[in-house]
Length: 234
Image (cartoon, rainbow, N blue to C red; front, side):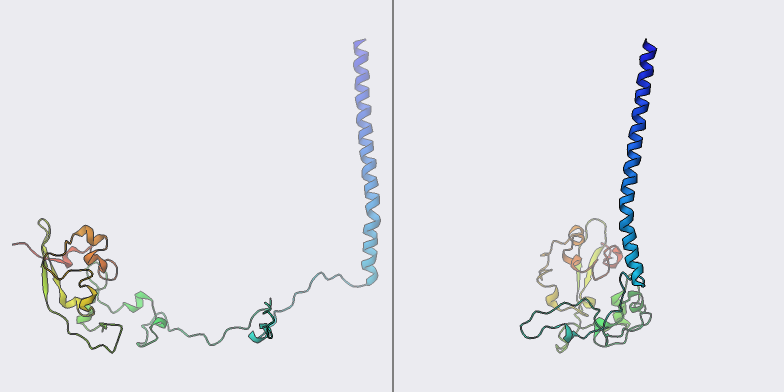
């Protein structure tokens, strides 16, 4: 009895699967039959015209003048999508492998440091020695941006600054600094003109105070101790 019941259930599920598969096939055939007339009608329409279908055709950009883009009167300016005319008359820069021609405009000169600094003497650390360059007349700096201002002769006056511990004392020479600096560049904003009135330390110099306002930025770095500490203690 049990075997007969299982056989009936198996037959029932088999018939059910066949029915579902048959219905799915019939539904797919009906959908395909409905879609074929539409495709055939579109194909017949295209063939009846006797010409290939062109979706879009690119055209070259039209060159226009600036006046054509401006509005007339109070009418707003219309932004066109056409390409503007090429810009002409741009400045021609000099050969970047050669030294620039002296004279203004200075901002258009060759700014390649490897070329512009080629003739500038170097110190032991490899940076430019501006004092030596001035003495060898490699450079001719101006004291002021106002070229009509009369030059002031360099001030030959050394100031000895005691150093901490066994480090040699510092000798500050005014002479090379006044090649291109005026007294007001440093006094009294950076250094007080009074003996002992400037609590100089290496920590403050590294942080950009006193000598650090220039050295390490536009002047030689403070890594070369022997450039400043030149006088041994007695």
